Image (tube, rainbow, N blue to C red; front, side, top):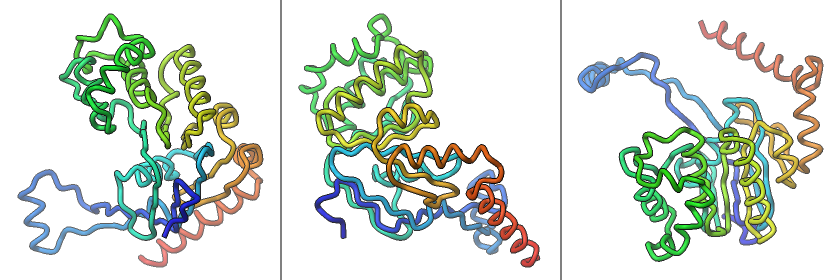
Amino acid sequence: MGDNKYVIDVDHVTIRFNKANAKVDNLKEYCIRLMKRELLFQEFLALKDVSLKVKAGEAWGLIGTNGSGKSTLLKAISGIMKPYKGTITVNGNISPLIELGAGFDPNLTARENIFMNGAVLGHSEKVMQEHFDEIVEFAEIEDFLDSPIKNYSSGMKARLGFSVATMVSSKILIVDEVLSVGDFLFRKKCMKRMEDMLSGGTTLLFVSHNLDQVRRLCDHVIWLDHGETVMMGETEKVCDEYQSMEDEDSPFNQKRRARKLARQQAKEAAK
């Protein structure tokens, strides 16, 4: 069970996906293969025995190369995915900003989406009305309020999504690569707002490939690689070790090559 002193307690979590070995294009073919027992799946572990304990007010950065499991971990903490093994305990309301445009209906206008997205986050219509002007001003979409979201650029969607998610200081803010889109002025505004939220006691989980942003916002970092925890601890120490990956002879790269060789040998032995 989770400890009450932690707002987030990830305890030995494993996330499993089943990948089909054959491409199935329609339901009929799926049923036929299933009845003939020709539908085979390959197990893929996106997270492997990961643990993370976050105290109130802490800011954790999640770093690692593409496919390392960062977004999967955030989705599991947000309740979007369920662990195959282990437990996740969250004490407090979450404002997740995980996927660009998630929670928006492309055929609805920005005005309509603001209220709909607010409802998804658990805010009443009254609260959304009170903060409506603030949301629009921060997102800088005054001239496009009655345009469908499908006509928005990725930067405009990011501005609107971030503005709605952060209009009220929640206990936990989860941000996944949102600052990788939009212009530098928008990124500057977002960084300032997150710093203000941190000063107010908000807990932050922040995924970014930009280590400068991680160093600026976060006091702790967890480094993931192929679903496994490589290192966690103070930001500067973990980020420095992560950057050492540029050295081909670093201990991490030596271990990585050894694991790759072991996987190849296991595949050959299984043939």
